[in-house]
Image (cartoon, rainbow, N blue to C red; front, top):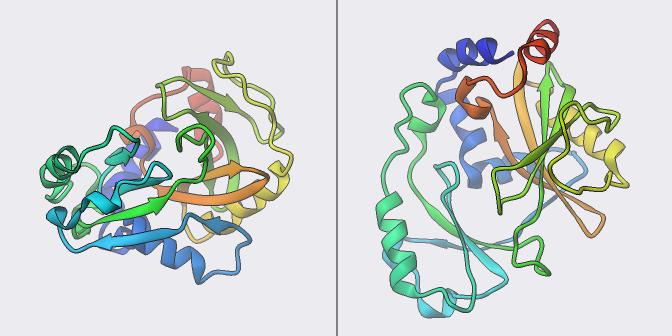
Length: 227
């Protein structure tokens, strides 16, 4: 599987850029009839220095449209200077040589409402790897650590469990959402949030882990044969 992702990434071009642009991806999903919610955009910043003291809200986040992990989880301790410093540092093309789909995105920043307000906005991410619109694995990750769980589509662990995560009550519906959003593509990982019994779209990821190996070789071979 990982070697096929590494080969696949060489075929990704500007056609895929709107799907990995975090603002454009929201628009694309809104225009479908897929039954999922989307986190509310509070404000699009004109430039990094457009951020103001009034924008600091503990139930909001600041995100870049064009980078991986370029998010600011605001708290009562967040300062304007600290946010602007990061935004100015990120105000450049992502320029990933091997993940060209990111190179065509104009750097922009926006403020988004947190999905999980109860624990500071650090909602779990449910990551559905899909081949030709068919989910094959589910990863669950916490933004607080690098640890994650991996399941098959029946919620059976395929690797040792690191996080205590209950099976989502609406898992079948999440699989339908992932299938519908991934259908136009040969391969994509559809990332979703699930909070308060609501399914939220997060993002499209075409080159998870940059095409590096993440599973033991027997599983990489098993899933690779499906593609």
